[in-house]
Image (cartoon, rainbow, N blue to C red; front, side):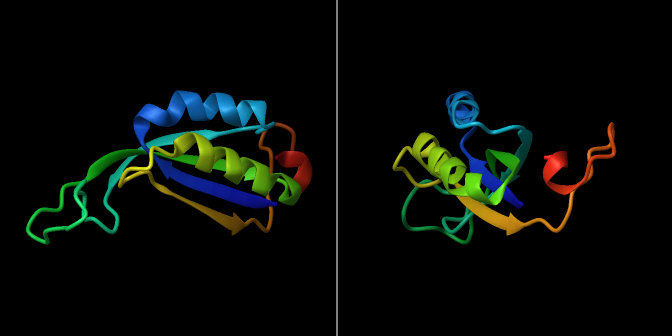
Length: 111
């Protein structure tokens, strides 16, 4: 199993959610977050260290089987892209185990 984490623009959330459901995502956690990346919170190519505001973003976390990861990452990349600075980031992390609290199911069955 893998944990797919993506930081995206808030205005792309609805479109991206529909795309993930269409691509068989079985669950999604959404968190409103703030931060900055390489441009230090600016939308210009040349950052100024004197100005580092936090930008509002949305964090998505999706637990997926290994064979689903590329499809879901591709859907996120396609539907989150605006081709402007600040589109976000996606990363994939191995998951050693999971437990569904309600049923006690573990690992792949708990996804």
